[in-house]
Image (tube, rainbow, N blue to C red; front, side):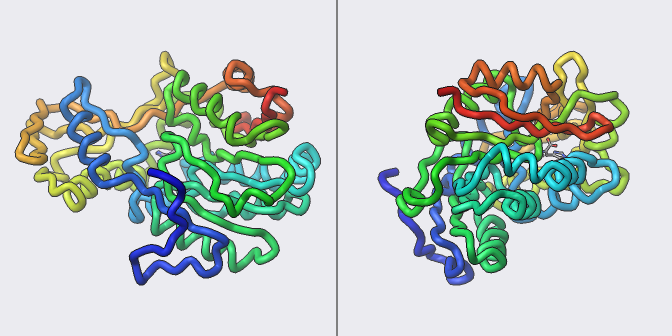
Length: 337
Ligand code: AVJ
């Protein structure tokens, strides 16, 4: 891809009126197909968690955040509220906020309200229509802030469009929700290291990181009683059917999630109930009874563990906020000068 095609989308239901810009770099469908074929041919089978997030997946994730078992969202929102003034003081005025994996606009609204005269906000997310809807609403509600959006896979890197050039005096990256936990530690460190270029000298990064904690709390958080997380995980199979034309029996798979303490991560899998076959592009991918597709890892970090990783990636830790129950943490990092 060359420079950005600032949209003009080819879809009548999408109109970018309230937004300062909407850049569409949504990965081609072929990427999902290639990744699904490669992942199903691998041993053990796997599919990356970014493929959860079509519009239905984003909505199911928002529902997960409202289940009583899933503590991260409400805990992080509490931290943003309780420590908003401290965070604003540490960040300073007139920053351009860049959010990695924006999702619903709940947390960014709280952050933007707390910050001292933020100049602009750029949301980056892979779920295009959902991103557009959320950010148009935000732009309407906060007309004093320039709001733009980029539909992209942020793990592949992205550039800020020209419209942001004169916005703010320093950049603040925002990666809430422990999204960083979805990467294996080496990839997480590489992502942080890459972000220092976009954030630049004096740039900062506010990152929400889920903490290590007793297994029973984590197991429940990723297998809620109402079955919302199960539906979220199984949505991957629905997407393979509807978008890739896969032939499979959705009810032949079940949701499995557990904390793997040795690895320091929650794992989610789709497990075959009896022998199963997924047929994709004329190819059969066979499952033995109980065989799994690994669909997500969610790494948990002690504050010191994460700070050490950030230092290796080229940041200086500037702030740390945790709740009294020790569930969740917010790290403020600054690009090392
Ligand atoms: C917040 C997107 C990182 O790992 O907790 C929630 C997603 N998966 N329940 C997490 C998720 C299952 C999630 N992220």
